[in-house]
Image (cartoon, rainbow, N blue to C red; front, side, top):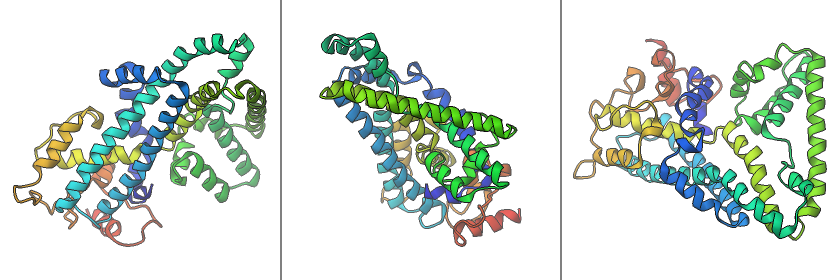
Length: 364
C-alpha cells in the first residue's frame, strides 16, 4: 500500500491497535452486522455452492483492487499532489466512497454467508453423493494449513533462522512481509513484539524447532487430504466448491485481513470524517464504521457551493495544527500519533510534502 510510506512511524506501528479498537468489535460476529447484511447473507447462502464461491472470490477481488485505488488517492492527498480545495478531488472522493460502501457490503454479505452456506448444503450433498462419515470429514477438512498454524510456523521459522545466523535475515524478512504484513517489514517487526508472535522471542532454539517441525507435519497432512480429496471431488463441482469455500473460511479471508487490505478504506473514511467534522458537517462518533453512506456523501456534497467550488474555511490549517498548502489531511492525527506530530519514516519518499511537514513538526 503506497500511502503507508507517508504515515508517521508511531501511527504506522499502531495499525493493528486501531483496527482492533475501531473495526473488529463491530464486525466480529454476524449478529453485529446490519440487519440488511444479515438478510442478504442468508439469501446468498441459498445459492448453488459453485455460484457462492465465485461471488465470494469476486467480492474479495473487488475489495482488494479498490484498496489499491484508495491507497493511490491517499498517497496523492498526503504527499500534497492533490488537496481538498479542489472540487475535482471531492467528486473523486464521492465516487470512491460510493464504491467503498458497495464493495464492503458485498464482501460482508458473502463472508457472513460462508458458514450458513456450508450448513445448508452439506446435508444435501451427503444424500446426493452418498457420502460416508469419512467422506464428510475429509470434505470439511481444510486441504491446506489453516491460517493460524501457517502464521505461527512461518514466523517460528524466521526466528529460528535468524537465531542461528546471529542476526536479521533481510531477504527472508521481506518475503515474510510480502506474504503476511502487507509488504511492510516495519509492520512485521512491530508484530513480533506483540501477542501472539511475541511469545516466539524468548523461546529456545529447540522450542522453535518443535514448532517448525509441527508445521511441516501439518503441511504434510493437509497435502494428503488434498490428494485423497481429489478423487472425492472429481466430476463433482459442488463438492469442489464446498472445499473452496472452506479454504476461504480457514485461510484466505484471514490472510487478506492480516495483510490489512482494509486499511486504505479505513484511512479514507477517517480522512473524509475528519474533513467533514472540521467543517461542522458531521457529528463525532466513536468509529468510522458507525457512519452510513448517506451521512458521508451528503457531507461531501455540502462542501461544494452553488457554483461548484469547494467551500473551505481556514484552509491553510493542516493536520496537527501545522500551516501547510495542502489543506486538510490527517497524517498521523488519524491514529492519534504522539502529540498529533508528524514523523515521516526515514528512507521513504526522500523529498516533497512529507519531508516539509516533518521538518515543520520537529520545530513544534
